[in-house]
Image (tube, rainbow, N blue to C red; front, side, top):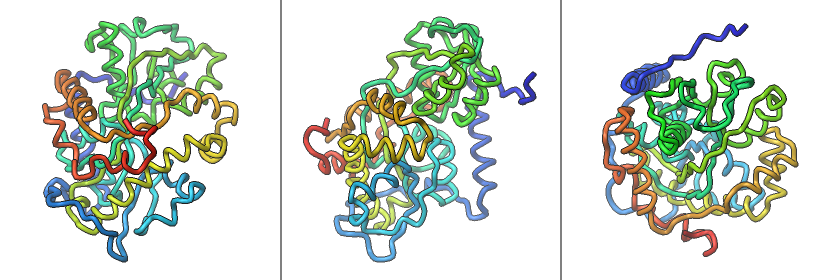
Length: 353
């Protein structure tokens, strides 16, 4: 018998209200110096020189942290990384932006939409695109769910401020299932595994290597993978407006973007080394599973033009707004196009889109 408290099963408007309340309460409480970052809108030409001595940024980019050394790129970092917070979930990053404990982060395209919805000013400064699905739905042991069509009437884990939330909405839309025909269980993605294991939800979208670890442990008990063709197109680097409005910090961000892109290319071109460093030693999966995971991935692609990325963000924002999860917005406001093309220019032609 489970002793876990049941997570909230919420309507769409309730989800939006809860998200704003939780973010506001948590973030204001985490730092006595907390203030809105929306007041410092970045303007002016992007600094072209190296950041001045003493410039520091706190960067939440775990993969890049692990790539810079073996890729020989660490020597090219012209500023001090004061810390590398090992955080990846969108709500955690937004909290870090509000508390001034994170200056630059890697996320999917959804957290910037959520940040905008709750008044946190931040901009996308680099874009990577992925044209194959990143998430697979995992089912709870014994749920009997075998396809998205079987989601009707079931409890589905849902995090509206993260990529997984929009994967849920897009999958339901493609299957012709109305949001009202499922129970969306509001959880941060870090709790999806616990909810699946305890049967609090019937299905949840998982990425790698979490999916492999979960199915290895619970596949014998009836847990299954339900695959869709829903693509989470964007991986982005983004930063608070006040960081981008500071010339020294903006110069540091500009210098980081090419290193981020080159690190991704290095990992693709040195897969055995990367599998050992990241999947085996950092994420705790077997080398064989690491190879299988990497074999399922696309090579990294960095667009010279952000037009497609902006259109994708707009489509996603419109989907969320139509469901009542966020207010309507102009997705172009989420991008600092002073940085457009920097990542693409830093990599060989075969890695540009």
